[in-house]
Amino acid sequence: MAHKILLIEDEPDIREQLRDYLALLYPESEILTAATVAEAQKLLDRGDFSLVISDCQLPDGLACDILSLVRERAPLIILTGYVEEEELSRVRRSVRGPIHVLKKPASLAEIAQIVQKHLGRP
View (tube, rainbow, N blue to C red):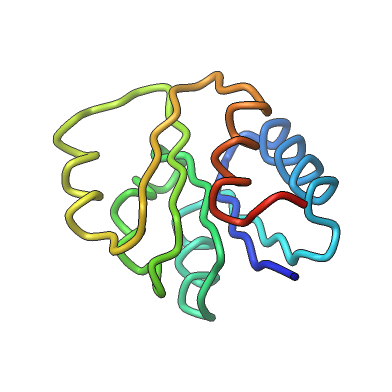
């Protein structure tokens, strides 16, 4: 089954590594990427996703502020080097789907375990 995955990450190396890894795990999936809040907003406005993986702090703001746009109870994985509990509580209240928070640097194995929990094994 093909999935639609949104990856929001401003660090090019991390974004490319995650995109390539997800493409290897789920070759039939559509993987869209964004490096800024503005780019992510445009992609979220275009439709629903099977899964969203996002950094919180981006160059033009906090991705956490727009993640309430995640529709259809899509699972959300937040990757962050800086965790402020108040911010995460606000996201948990506004997002309808399951939320997982991983502190950077998270291993690909940790991320894959959560992704496979929601999308199934490839």
